[in-house]
Image (cartoon, rainbow, N blue to C red; front, top):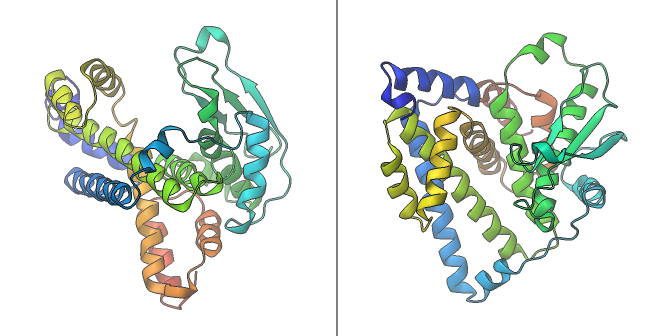
Length: 312
């Protein structure tokens, strides 16, 4: 079992989850938010399929603009200009994971540069056959533009106090990468309804991982409980066991992605509600990038002060 099977394990996991996500939500509140996200995303997907019976076939056969990493990064770099603030030219290199590590590393990763050297940017691509290059476009958005590379260099250009580089901001960092990844469906030349379908599908998957992490490390799920949970969503036993083993091995690994994303999504929806037709994605993104990595309570506090003045 995970932390949920150890003395004081659930209490430790709650502290760990808040530390890793930068969210002040309790585990109970995180579970409620993730459950709501799954329900809403599935309803949206079902409604979209009812409106367009061919939508799932379009999803199953969708093609991204390119499978070449460098070409994809350059395409994204240009495509984000309408909704994201400008960034001075950045040097970066696309490299590839050594074959000996392909079985152990994620599909791609951005190596955060030293805070006094914005020019040393490297994105590594894992050419493991399990990670098809045809789907690399959204991963490049997560790691590159408008994800980690873009966000990190933008932040360095604001000349933040050096102490801020020592603070743990996993929820902001990975939440932003996930937000960028989901946003990239809107930049891939897909129809609005297909892009929304893809986004809702990804939100569902991420949230299910988060709920499993809470189940294992807070509620004491064993392997059987995890299998039953995933089989309710059509996932086979072997895949469910792999997910369970990954989550047992590394507590707190998934929540920064799903809770971090949902915190950004909630901030976006709050700003939209407050500003109405004057809401601008570019203004919203500029605010988030200017304030930089921080706990979400602090970000919301500063956003509320600006919204009271009718601006971002």
